[in-house]
Image (cartoon, rainbow, N blue to C red; front, top):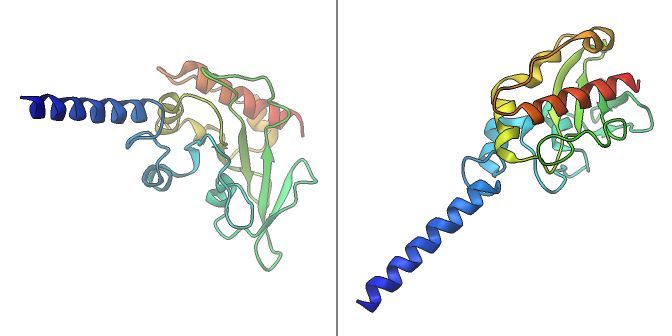
Length: 183
């Protein structure tokens, strides 16, 4: 009987840990584990900054797979490959987006541009936002709202919030706007 009770307690504890990990963004299906970071790609956020061996944010690597360097001395930062060929540009929302908060925290983004300065992607950077809400925004295709637009057209673009993730999606849109207005 003691053995059955002990095994039951262990099973319950294991279930509780798995549920807590999932709820807090560490279990399978959260968008933060390695599988989902690869599967869902560019928009999965992490608590710790995620960079490659060259110190480049993984969001930038997703936008420009052959990136070797980013010149962050400019607001519209040129992105280069190992041969110093211009791949495009990135714009970071911080510090322009400081104070813009979603449900649980700030929602900093990086905006990728082609060499012709047309938006090719918006990527959520590491943040404190609730993983479930961030994942819902990603899955909705929300980040694609600005693809193909110039800065001028993107600033005029009105986007609808994502149902069930209104605070997060609204904050992302405000972060995009703040970044573009700072150019």
